[in-house]
Image 1 (cartoon, rainbow, N blue to C red):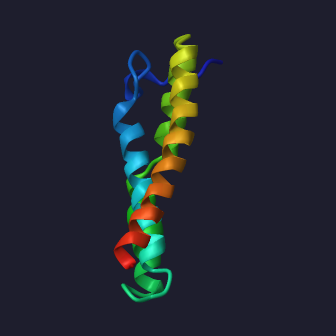
Image 2 (image 1 turned 135 degrees about the vertical axis):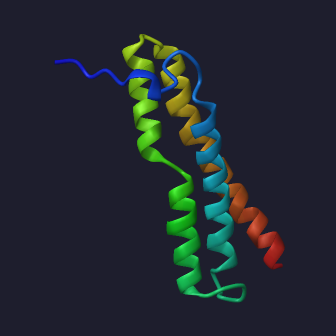
Length: 107
């Protein structure tokens, strides 16, 4: 039995939409974390709503998985490796940038 994902993935191109959403969500989560850190901007409940709810809903690990599998199923191994490795690196950098921006805003 083989798993065929069909047209819901970017098997023949690079999945830019999910890649961008995950990077922006990582940046936003870093920003939210810092701005809520000392509760001067907003409290723990809003931090949870924005961090887990909004940023968690905005980013999508499940789409990342499906797109990665679709690329591999179509023998686009280089694109799959670039997508998976690039997502990890770019999201870590974006999260760190969010922390830096948050600290600059907070003063």
